[in-house]
Image (cartoon, rainbow, N blue to C red; front, side, top):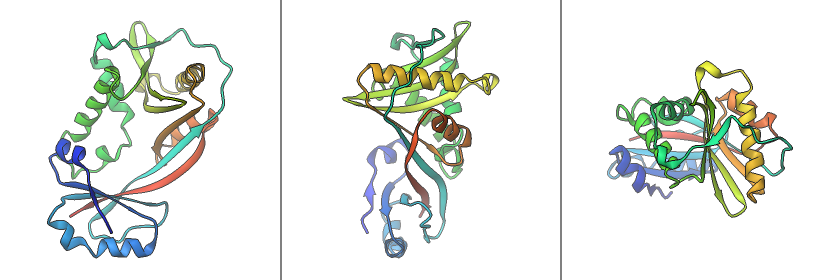
Length: 231
C-alpha cells in the first residue's frame, strides 16, 4: 500500500503528512500493518476510504464524511443587487475573514485537536486570502448589508466547470433565506459564464449545507470517509 507524501500540508502544518486511498477491507488491513514502517517517515496519514468501509489503524479518527455535490442545470432568477463581487484591491477585511472561519465550522482541521494550535485559523485565513487574490478562485461573492459582507461564496471557474469553495452566512443573519439567494445567484452567474457543471464539497455532518445544496438542485456525486491516522 503506497502512502504519498503531501508536501504542501507537511510544510504548512509543520508535520510529516501523507495520504492513502483504500477501497476494500484487504487494503485496510495491509495499510494498518505498515504502521511501524510508516512511523519512520510520517506523523500523520490522511486515509480516504470508501464510505462505510472503516479503517482499523491504531489511533485513527474518522474526522470527515466528505460529500461532493454536482449540478448541471441553470436557474431562472435575477442576479441579486445585494450581492457583489469582492474587489481584490480591498484585500481581506476582518468581516470577510470572520466569514471564512465560519465556513470551516465542520472542517476536519478544526475538529481534530491534535493539529498544532491555530492550524484551522491559519488554513482558512490563507484560503480566503488566496481566493480574494484570485489564486484559487475566480470570484468572491459577498452579500452586503450596510456596506458589510454578511454572506460569502467563492467560485473557481475553469473551462466549463465551476467549483464552489467557501460558503458562509454570518450567524446573526442565518435562517433568512440568504444562503439560497446567494446560491441561486452564483448558479446563474456560473451558467452565464459558460460553466455547464458546478461542484461543491461539504461534510455529511453539516446538515444545513447539505440541505442548501439539495434544495437548489445539487445531487450527491460521491461520499468519502476521511480518517486522520496519527502515528
